[in-house]
Image 1 (tube, rainbow, N blue to C red):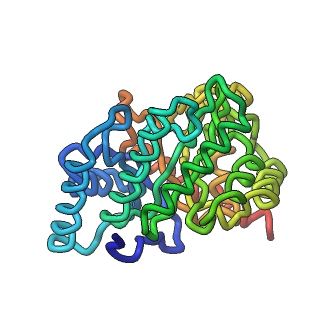
Image 2: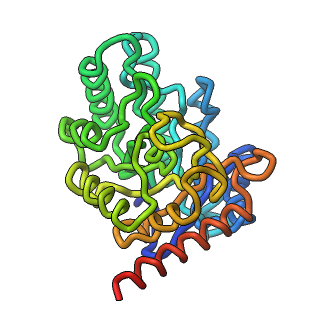
Image 3: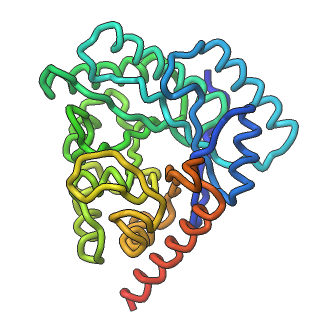
Length: 305
């Protein structure tokens, strides 16, 4: 059931953050505003447990009603799908459960008018990549055939550890080309995953190489948002380990360059950093993100003079 037009991000510099939904959707909105975020990302269920979709859906419907009455100034929300979802899994029970969970996540994203549902594609475990991709594509097609919504599913690139799917843009492009409704999909690029998978963006030339690669595979227009994170590990490590902005191996200069490039500067940059005392992104982190974005825009604009 469609609840209305999906919230879109205005063409402006946008720094967001992942926040807790504890206490409800309105509380998550409050947390975002308190730290200066211009959009937020949430889990609609515990990311590591299979929760009752009935309770989760009732909370979403209540939010839609309350938020309409309370305030029309709602921060755009992105939903991050459960980490348990694995559409490439060879385990039949897990595969079926993953499809059902993604349908639930997408349905709830529709109810709360989310700007996008961000998804980790999963791992093919002890089977072949080819077989894993077949399962994945079939699962995604089943989900879009079942859930009618304007909310896009945003495929997130991976760091490449183990048998995960989605490290390379060529692979993501291949997946998109096999989907029945490819126009309902986009991509969320995680800077830490990108760095860990072997890409660097420490110079104008490196960022240009990256954007050219993206454009020649998935297409720049398919990139809808970023996860804006530094990295605890070095480039090429293939490990998913986030650091606060400027405190990792990517560093402030590289983060500024990728954020400020004309290809991406108006896309939402969502922080998934540890924050102070590992309590999640805070006001300082959001402020740092805004400064890096402005710095990056200035660097690119000065280069073009």
